[in-house]
Image (spheres, rainbow, N blue to C red):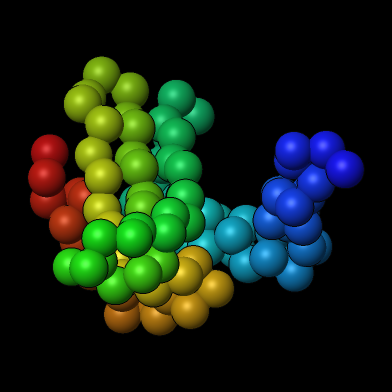
Length: 96
């Protein structure tokens, strides 16, 4: 048994999860009116610090000619609500 055998299941992303991530990215891209030279990434991180909510969605906005900006939502990306997306967009757009 290889050292990484126990992690194989963790590394696989089901199609449903990939679809949710893509849908969230598309909604954010549209709401933020991203251009061709702009980019957005969405990551789900697990925080083991007692002060963390456990799982967070981290949105990183990279606009051409600007410093990257990040926003965290205290939920897995599959559980992110529309009002949280709206708040993220307001914060990310207002940080310029």
